[in-house]
Length: 356
Image (cartoon, rainbow, N blue to C red; front, side):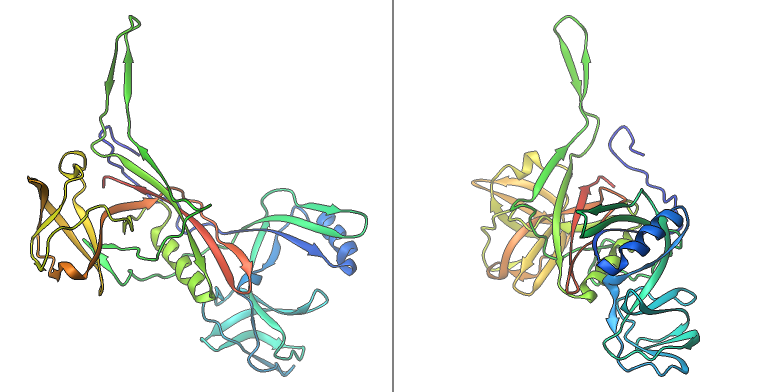
């Protein structure tokens, strides 16, 4: 809910986020008939959905007489009371219910009746239903299946604050990637137009700040990377919980030399007149990021003098760039992780700089 001056009030409506899986898979020739029967006769019911993106190999074979499954459970959503699968092929697999687990072992509620070698894959399973009608494509021989499952057993993952904090909020410092070679910023403000029908118009802009919307990309090269990003998404709770993020651009050109205290001198690019309400900056140094609040920006011809509320505490020679620091939220409550295979994935992250 946005007030007249642009401030937002955000309220969480769901106790936990909804999860879904969308995919397009090739159907082995031997499974074409069973798939047709399954889609026809079980279309309206719930399915067990293997989370193949989180699969991993057994670390030792099962015995056929034990409930113990030796497998790493790190960076995967195995849940006590939830389902799992040991998989070799569409006709050689076993489902189990998780009784307890550690980072290296799962105890099932019943004996794993089949002996599986270490080439077998173990993965969590979720219970879901088709969100839309599945589409089976065939050329008379080869077939593919397009599916979209919505999960019916959802949970909120336990998260911790980000390692870097500023003013009581997480700071997001993963290097953003461009999308199609560009990072696109959309500068949004509310402009009300009063047209009196006589050729005269008045405009009113009640928002206190311009809101910048940006989409950027992230690439994940390990299951740990994806898991950490997923935890970060759970911590955001959709649009609810804001975070800080620098622009990763040189928004101020430093002209000061030597040790920097609370005064910085920068090139005059109009920051004193056209950047009202931008009160926070990130300073990237050779030792990492530091964050400071701006007290004032005044003219000190031919430059500008930026006064901080606390000392920068670095040498000018160690400063790589100075960026605006934006208080942001996710633009959408619906975000996707796109799996590329070999435990790699990518994501597009839409963000909005907000007033509060």
